[in-house]
Amino acid sequence: MLIGNRLSTVMVIAICVAVSAFAKPAVSSSTPKGEKNKREKPTDPADAQSIDKLIAQLNADSFQEREDAVRRLIAVGTPAIESLQRLADDPRTDPDVRLRAARAAFAIATVKIDSDRRLGVHTNGWAQRVALAPDGKQAVTAGFDALRCWDLSSGKQVRVFGQNQRGYWSLAFAANGERLIAGSNDHSAYVFNVKTGDRVQRLAGHTNAVWGAVLTADGKQALTGGWDRTIRVWDVVTGKQIRAFNNVRDNVRCMTLSPDGKLLAAGHFAAVNGPGTIRLWDVAKGTEVRSMPGHEMEVSSIAFSHDGKLLVSTSFDKTVRVWRVADGKELKILKGHDGRIEGAVFTPNGQRIISCCNEDDPTVRLWDVASGKLLGVSDKVNQGFLSLVALPDNRHCLTTGKDGAVRSWRWAR
Image 1 (cartoon, helix red, strand yellow):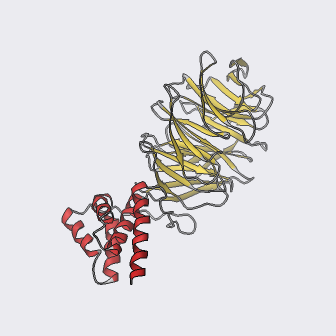
Image 2: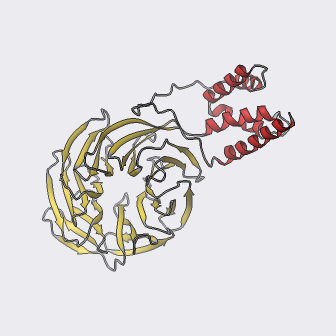
Image 3: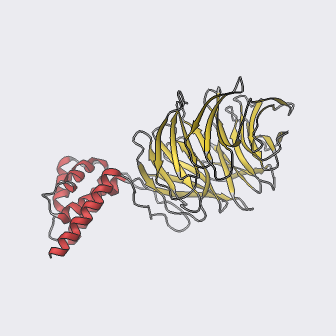
């Protein structure tokens, strides 16, 4: 009996530490075959008296009653978590009761991330990139086969266009939603009419792969960056290069425009498997505003918050980093992924960051921006991910992956 009590105490301590830190949420295992998510039914908050009654039931004589109390407290959710954590931390309480309280608190605190829909598959290998239309109603994904447009309300494919066997490594909408640009391994960037899928222009001039490509708000100009250590500005109507940025010292692996269109953020690297640097560029002048070193390997993605005040970046160094745009200060380093991180974005409300990783840790993860804490982890999926976007409702995202699939994900809170 003494051994059993000691073992229970050790388990309680371990779980309570996890509850207070939220460092490693339990992986959701609720996604059935076919990746169809069963929607959770909302639970009406219980009053304090009902919560106290369920907590008292954690010490019931019957094992079934105790487990039923745990299940029902989890269903109550956030209103019960403070009482549960207080009980789990109380050394005067029976160790087994503390363990059950900690289990329930941990389950409530952990956000479930489930794949609720698989939209479709790119047929020739990886699905490299995804871009969300400004109105949030459609998305376009890029593969080695073509570009594919998806209607997000129905989940159906609308059209296939831009066939290119060299594949695309950058993808972005103009702010007006009428045009889309895609940067290719064939050293060119292509501009398309989103409604028809027709190619509007080919922008040719780079001497290596184009991994960064964005359009100005009106879709009339484009900015592209490549592995030839150049950032170029183009007239979309004529297809002619207007100018090049000054003193671009390193390759460009990713880039994005600030919400007001005045700044270009780019992830630069000098050598494969070498350190990555984020640089902010003045779009009008073509000059560097500031350099933000820190990542120990290539920067794989970069995104502004919707108010333009923060940047989130990912790297093959297994970290997600949050930066302040005004002065370039690194605010947080988010650690938890066990492999090369491929992408991260803010949710539209700016409260969360959603990230995804390659085949070494093929998960989607949710983080709290204010605290930097890890809130939830998805099941592992096949060969890992390559990009993602957050949807307008702050509770869904889309991913593309190395298995070619385009998936929608949902988190419960």
